[in-house]
Length: 304
Ligand SMILES: [Zn+2]
Image (cartoon, rainbow, N blue to C red):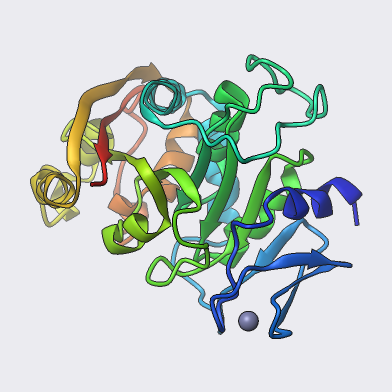
């Protein structure tokens, strides 16, 4: 195994907790172990599975992962990634206990000051293929722990990440295997939330940065599939209400844009969006879609 993929787990010591007994996990050889002797191997791709029992999710297989990667590479989510990074920079307390990222160690990394130890610890809850975790690492120099319940997604994300700044793991949102008060910011992008778990994971003054789609998000795809969708428009009021009840709203802004897209990107978008999971794609004519709107509301909240 690439030694740096192993070292990312040493750098995260004090963060991960044993999913069996809750004790801290430390790297021993090629496995994470707790004092009680529960062990979890670091897979050669550079992630660890802390989910007991496996889960396979509809729409989150390898093909879907590659579609996501294509869409992210096309830059459609770039304004959202930039807004998330700004929100983390502006509002997250800086975790001073973390070790700094190794200087010049990651290809394509940088704008952050090398050697700085004032870098927030970010927990990406529902990381999917890892785009937003990587962007946060690159833009802010944050030390990121990223998890998803989809093992396929985490495996591929870890395999594609050559750096040592992001710890990848498979876990369930209902019981996040991290130590209490071990993170400065929970990132929760287009993904379900568990505020009780977020509260437990956050250090005093910690924040939640959440992205939810606006009603304009993918409106062109929605229009193309209108006959098959149960709801003509996406309403995020319920999600916003739940957020406001769970933490004190610090900032709320909209990020995104409308982008020209080629046919292959439209196909990939339609294949990856949960909007289309129950739609018969063969009956949707996407040929007229030449532009798509990708837009999210970015919510920043502070836990009491
Ligand atoms: Zn244990």
